[in-house]
Image (cartoon, rainbow, N blue to C red; front, side, top):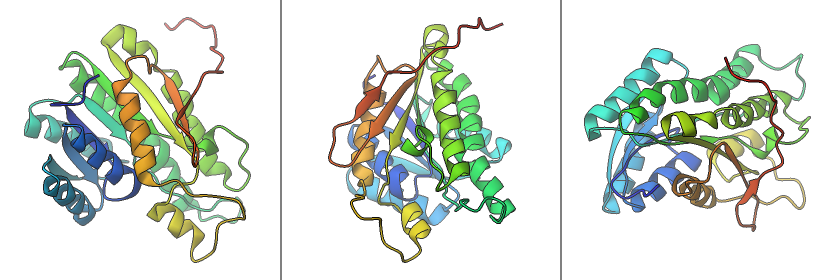
Length: 254
């Protein structure tokens, strides 16, 4: 898909991967709806896009609230006249190594933001993309959703859920011309990681990926018409890698 002239909606776009993605897509010629619960941060992302000559608008939204997500999609459509591309990116990281002792409210909030919000965003976007004859949806998952990750099992489960959700929506391409894909970065240098470290240091030999490197992968997934149910891994110092070894459960949909 050519990005020039398209309308894009990015959630969690007040900082980190979301901001980098919004800036990259705007640089490629898209008009961008910048969505985040942090209205000031979303406004700053819009300011940066406009300073670089792009076009954007800020939307304040709680991505775990179905009504607000629907209003977000409607607002993007009304402001720009349609919607072509969605990057469901919002996410948080809450420590859950000691699962029985982890704060239950914060743990459930992570489940809702990392997975439920992706479901809601995708569900709300499908009719909007259909009105444009199709489009592309990119979800932010994580390498933690591809491996055994005892350091944070609930976070891993939310991201594995996003991967499985993405793979299982490949049929939308044939039925509606809507391509769904996801990106799975390793640790990214974002406020999410900084907060999780809480003044600590990275383990020896662990490098952080810049958000801009992840944004390159997002743009690649949007542009690649073969990225159908695709899972892209991003590792430090390596080019993006498409992961192919996923079995399909041979059950007909009814």
